[in-house]
Structures are given as C-alpha cells and as structure tokens.
Amino acid sequence: MTNINLSQPTITLRQPDDMHLHLRDGDVMRSVLPASTRVFRRAVIMPNLAPPITTIDQAKAYKKSILSEITKDINFLPLVTAYLTDDISSDELKKGFEEQVFFAAKLYPANATTNSSSGVRDIRNLYSVFEMMEQIGLPLLIHGEVTDSDVDIFDREAVFIEKYLQPLLKDFPLLKVVLEHITTQNAVQFVESSEYNLGATITPHHLHINRNAMFHGGFRSDFYCLPVAKREQHRVSLRRAATSGKSCFFLGTDSAPHLRDAKESACGCAGIFNAFNAIESYAQVFEEENALEKLEAFASEFGARFYGLPLNNDFITLEKRRCKVPDRIPLVGSFSEKEFIVPFHAGEYLNWSLVNTQT
Ligand code: DOR
Ligand code: ZN
Image (cartoon, rainbow, N blue to C red; front, side):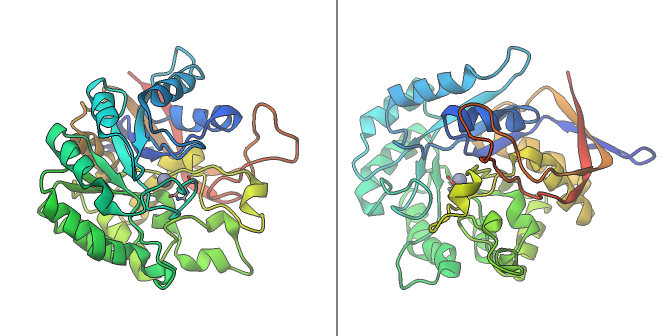
C-alpha cells in the first residue's frame, strides 16, 4: 500500500521496476545508468543496440557490461531481452530463456524506430517462434506500429492492433504479450478489454505531452519519440488508464537517450531521455489525477505480477519538494564538452523529489 503522509507530504512506496528501458552501451550507458539505478530495482532492457542482441553470448556480455558499471552498494538487476529478426533461431531463444539469459523477446517491425532495420519484415515468418514462446512462457514485447507509408503516422498504432495484434492473440491465446509504450485510446480500450494474457507499459512522456509539444513555436525534437505523441484525447485516456488501478497497465519509461546532435540532425532520432526524473514525473501525473494512492501498484506491483517476478523488498520515499530539472545532462567518458543529453522536463519544475532508499 502506498503510504501517504499529508501533514508533511511524502509518499513511500515499494521500490519500483522499469519495465521498458533503453540503456545503450559504452559511454552513453555509463552516463545514463545512475539515473535508473538511483530508483529502480529492476529494468527490462531493450535490445536495439547496433548490432542488436540476438544471441545468448551477446546478451550475457551486455548484462555483464551493465553490471560492471554498478557499484556494490546498489541493487539493480538488468533483465536483458532478445531482438527478434525474421530468421532468429528458435533454439537459441529457447535455450537463452531456459538459462535465464533472455527475459523476454522484443518485436520491432522493420524500420519502425531507432535501430530497427534488422527487425521483423513479416510477422508470419515468426509463427513457429511464437508457438515455442507460448509453450515455454517466454514473453513477447511488441513495438506496435505498422510502417506502411500510406498509413498516417498518427494511426500506426491503431492499425497495428487491428491488423496484427488481434490475430496474433487469437492464434496464440496463451502467449504472454506486452504492448509497449501505448499512445492511443484505441490501445487502452483494446488492452483493458482483452481476454488474453496482454499487458501494456505507459511512459511518463505520453502522460504529459500531446502532439502539440513537438511543434510549439517551432519544431521541438526533444519531444519526438516513437510512437509519436497523439491528440489530447489520447493523452487523457492514457492518464485514466495509468491511474485506473487496472493491473494490465504498468510502468515502463521507454527512456531513450540520444545525444543532442543526433536529435537535431537532418534526420533527428526518436527518443526521450526521461530516466533522470521518471518516478517524479509519474508522481506528478498521479497527483494531478488525485490518484497518488494508485502509484505504487502501477510502478511496483502490476509489472512484477504480470511477469511473475517477486515484489521488491525495499522502499523509496518521495517528498513534496519542488525541484528544477537541469537543461542538460553531462556525459562521462569520451565526449567533447559540446555533447550532452537533454532530459525530459528540462528547465521545468517538478513537484516531487526522491528522498532515499530504505531497507
Ligand atoms: O522513441 C523511441 N526511441 N522509440 C523507440 O521505439 C525506440 C527508442 C530508441 O531506441 O531510441
Ligand atoms: Zn523503447
């Protein structure tokens, strides 16, 4: 139960998990990792590196490299995922899951987003893989957007649900599926009324911004992510879903760091780095929706339960203290002084601040 102290406003909640996180590798990973480990106990780590994580050896090496950056006083478990390709080896996936190397498998439709060019061109090519996944309980995580050029970018999630997700769930009724970073009312309604083993993650940014944010006074690449933010009615629907207390909706930040230059280039990268203040950002939404008592279940229980993980034993406390978000995050390692990452909410104030981690 969320413990809310109203005289001196604090909220204490079970330590949360981030069920969708991009950490990258090398010096970018080194730079952004502390933002996640300061608050989350576990994170489902996305495999869209270059090259993508498709083998057990790669996954083991990636996990090791993440853990090697974490000091002993911090408890953080990266749950590494496999990247599905048209010709991924079913045996490798199965073995990786059985050896607890792969936590889940991620489906990116080819060219749907950052580093997805090796993604899946035809979902039907994977039907024997899904059969195996259903049998052994390996969860399928989906970037749910079609890529057809004749489908409007704002409709890509809704079309994916109708054209691919619905049939997939019918064909594999026992498969555990997460529709990641949902952005539409269509997705909310589909997930909450589903009779299948279907969950959805919701990001902080899709709870805060609608599509106007990308065009406010000029083009704002800081708010460009995929799936793109949609109309206000969809944001409202996502806020209702996140704060509804329905266990099919849980926390997944989709924090996706890109250097400033990469976001502002001729072909700017999609992704918002929100890990720097993710839990504070979610807390603000839950407060605005008068639903702070629902934050803990969304952040710390529903995701773990969906995946069959034990709940975390530690607790975190947030206090109601306004805090200004910096304009940029400095990087560690081999970067020039001109390189930096802009965090979500840069330059704004957030109402809640993290106090400590208790045991
Ligand atoms: O905005 C996004 N950024 N969406 C994704 O699906 C991928 C991510 C990234 O890796 O940068
Ligand atoms: Zn993602």
